[in-house]
Length: 604
Image (tube, rainbow, N blue to C red):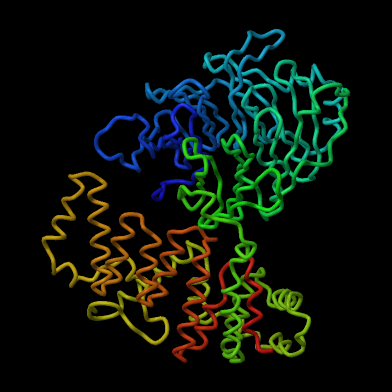
């Protein structure tokens, strides 16, 4: 799906409308995406991108959305400010519950039914929630103005001895929750890795798992038996509680084993979801490591490995009509729809930077120049906290043992006056900085441009830093002078609707790119939110500074295309046998996990 206006924190497809997905966004909106026409009526071709935006009564990032299992158009949601509410899509009405969490953070929500409490009315429809504070609430879905019931109190009453053992733990609390589809069991995850399972009719504890010692970040039920648990470490475990329901002692012995353990992900699990297949138990997982996987509960090797996201993946759900379809969304603001059978797992996929590493090693023939050494060390100083000696020690501590450290120790005897950055080093520092640094560089070059007399047409060429980033924001005036009718049509196209405008804008961008007007073509692509297309245009025109600037300004800092652009530019400069110092610097990838690559540019 096209670029969204915020992070895609949550996805959910209702059973009563398999062609519709609710998206919880990070800009105080909920998007209802009708990706498939399920009305069965013949007529015009369905618009795949047809959406409805909900915003009335919503505040803050929408971190969770959950459709009602049976009632149409009823959607539960939670926000970053600890608010929980219900949105009636048909009536465009938003109801926020009176009780809310005091601190910001992820609030997990689940629908539950027929909950019997001793001194409270029988809850036909409830929303059970939990947040990192450890408080578990049960909201009456039909009484918006009543206070929520504190589930922790009932768990304490029914399981006093077990709760005493929990209270003895220091700095440990419940942090996430999930109710099984039959509304029989409540699972609670803890920050120390413990998973508790309670019966919803009595709140009696029936199962405890402790197979990991890190915080639980996601829970997902597959029927009343299989429970998938995702952890902050990236590990996923599956537990079968079918045989754990009877004769449970007052203080259950934690189960340290699991039916299955998956260790493919290397960062926090953000969401888990079981498929709707009747003949197989397939689990989809997404993580902050930018990958999505599909597992079979009976096999530790993934069935599928999806690596198209360019930032942390935050949400996942399975298609209901097409059972093999997976929906994923994340911090790159894209929602991908893909079939797990089209992305079979290959162990080599996990290493994204191997090609980049080869490019870095190819640059070894241009090291050894004093000015290059100085620039590299100044960059290392910025990365490692501002102290030259500390930077050198960090470099020495990580270098390969087969290299003699004495060959580069003379760097520490560089003239201390050379630590003061010259103008070139300041430019390099801004170029390798974050988004704000890139904006500062554009502003600095804008002031420099004001001092340049005369006007230029097309792209400005120079020997070192003369190619001004300001041209990213400017246009080729000659392109405007031709095809005036096309530009008039493009200017009037919004009157015919957003889709018409986007279509004409994209066609104009393609025409300009083919007409050797990369700056204006990229500007048109950016206007219709096609950031990667704009980068591609600059890339194909060998305008790498512009491509890198656009990537840094418009994409997440961890997007893998940024180091790829640096490496490609370094290769290009090296092949031209010019600007060797610049070529070496472009290989110094501005990402924390690759900062050790500075070793390639020290003279050893």
